[in-house]
Image 1 (cartoon, rainbow, N blue to C red):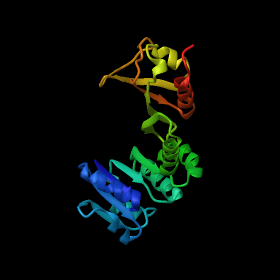
Image 2 (tube, rainbow, N blue to C red):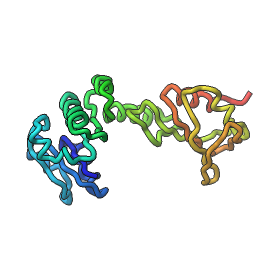
Image 3 (cartoon, rainbow, N blue to C red):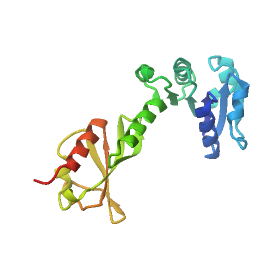
Image 4 (cartoon, one colour):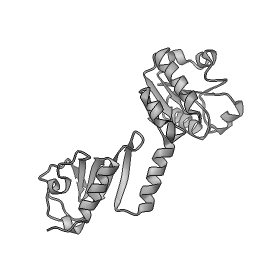
Length: 219
């Protein structure tokens, strides 16, 4: 895949190196030539110095032949404009935009971009780690609106059906159940055992409800 990374800060340089090592053709664009020093020594992609808002710079970067573009500068406005041009003028369908200021995330989402907000996601993950709850996030979709959680089945739920735990809420769905090292796709009739690992996709509200249910004693 031929990818353009706009912005060679900490995120952009790490992304570019990761894409290169995965076997992709990578071109990095930044207005400051010194920024390319952040790239790992073994990076063998292309670098283009110039303002990404310039059509000439984007075309030097090969945007007319690109399969994907990531706009990851620390300017939400710049990222939005470059992403819009990539999608509407150069017809690049695979466009990802970094959100730097969480307060502007909704603005970027109104354009229909794929948006990644490292600040919002990072804050959510740190909060979860500090909380000390027996629920771990193993995958985050979007900016953390929906995540996949790993829950350990406690003693008080031993022998009970999964359907009793999940109820009818639309805020969470079962993904997999691991018992004795083997995983399966559970049903509402699946019997839970102490120590089983239950994976569910849920919103923040949904996982709060599930955590509360796990702590309840059988009546």
